[in-house]
Image 1 (cartoon, rainbow, N blue to C red):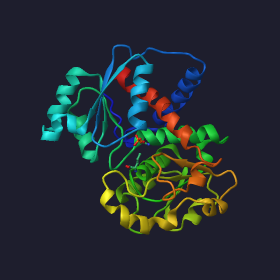
Image 2: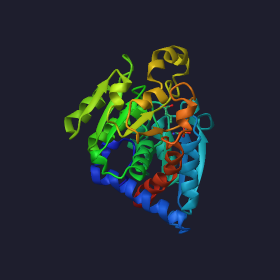
Image 3: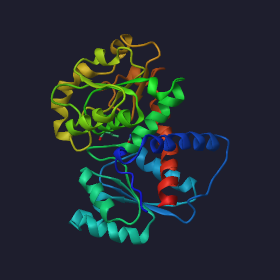
Length: 306
Ligand code: CP
Ligand code: NVA
């Protein structure tokens, strides 16, 4: 059976933990010089309709490190740019490669590719979700905090965007507390929030005040104020989001060991100050590294097991 990774909703707690636990093992093994070639002879196509530094390179590096191959296709390089139907693309690509890693706009695009592909489709970011990123972010949290995930309180400050939506799914499935501070008009997706709350064992709360969100929090997350595809809103958002900047004044109101996450790319002195991004509480560089280890765990599971 083909198992896609297009939304965290498709996995239970144990399955989500598997990616993280396996990535921690693969990271340790890589540090010890242990190499695997489990994807020898396997190829993935990377269909990216939006820019990427980390996700693209860490997926490609993960494939090569495990003996496989990756073919990168930017949005403008395929016949999708000339309106070839997604269902045709999915079926043709399935005859050539062992998996599709897709970064695009609508979640409906990865849904349709997955409906027609006979090889696994992995969501490398849509407007709605960024599942691979949240798995590596949680892996990073577990490396830093000496506590079970279920005992941690995680805060999100800023836009209720694809990252926020995916944190909400993760909080619900993995059972940790999540509090989001978003400006009015920039809340996370209401349907995702409702579905998450319906099964959550810990509170998932949306507030307006960033200080309220980080009170007693163990981790604070931030992300750009204008995501890819929202460039024309950049100016307006700069004004609306200013009170949500993660800076030293905000951190001063939180716990001393508050850990700062940023998935990158960062806009210094917009959503996060240079001081905080470069400061001792920020683990953005570990998050970036961990993307490669998580991607190895994802590829191993989906490409080997189908
Ligand atoms: N965090 C992340 O997805 O980065 P890229 O856009 O560079 O892939
Ligand atoms: N919310 C951001 C995440 C970038 C990794 C975006 O979609 O552009």
